[in-house]
Image (cartoon, rainbow, N blue to C red; front, top):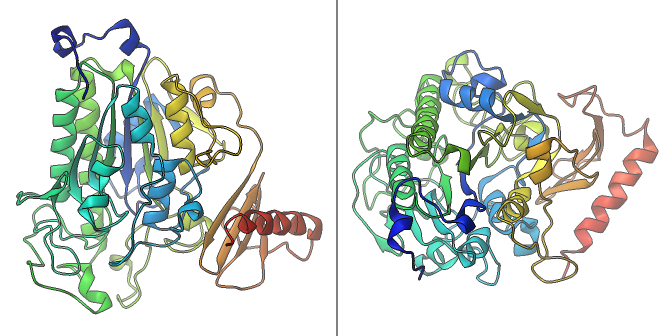
Length: 445
């Protein structure tokens, strides 16, 4: 339990020690595509708050989710480690054990240093309350354990109510995005006098695709079995205007949270980091292929969620910190979700686990890059999902989908990954192939 003197409860007051420790707000969108918001080229979706965040901060153009789907990326974000170390390589299903309790999360490390910690929204790292966020370093959790719930009724795909305050199920009325936003703002207000770490883990824009005006589509006890049954009240389309409104509601959420920081005079003490857990779903199998049914945009990238072309894992990412991160910046540094854990540790002046320790991190700190534009050290990055694999070194990308022969792409000259250079640049292809195999060997029993 933290003990604070009464002065720490006054708005805008911090001790000398706390002043050196910034607040952290990570906003994690779900299934948001690289080309879904205005500052990444979208001319349909109206996202003024995210666009302003990019103008006032640093926009990454080569930032990647650790995976092309939900649970693995979330595991990597929390632990700073490749999700393969936790045997989490695909979205967790009904019987999955979830995030191992032996893993040390960024929330645990920050809480030990005196931070108030909260996760508002989606967990998707195990469906058992005794292994939820409250057991992984978060003082407070409000949201859903499952990967997808009805946005109005909060019923999951198995027909169960799935809305929690810490370990207790609660009946709370409201649209997912709105509730997540309101609880996030409440948490910021309640902890404005001490350093805090807030993970705003949105459901949006994951299916079932629903607007804030839609009535509940699924009630308790109603389980769906077929693929299209999970799409919500708009399964027959058109889907594009529904998803557009979900994106715009997500944008308003960002605006409300940032405005709260401004009003409480916390903006200059707070790093806001916005990203997505994977690329967007451009088309859904079984839904008629029409322009009106286009879902997300990953333009100008190839592929979508679940795939290891760039559209599956390169994601829109913005870092904002007035007075600390230069405005209107653009970064071509190759970052990854797991880098957030060491970044926050360094910004909080905490030691990073090093060497061969069990809890050693795979991610690297972005601190100097964010604050002074220093380049990141050269490294190789890897992705694996079942029999699909990819490796990245400099601008070179090696990729194999579902066991197919490896392709080699030069992303500097072929961002849509159309020209396979594997037979031309054999030395580069072999270098990446060998590195990928060496990386995989770490996870073999």
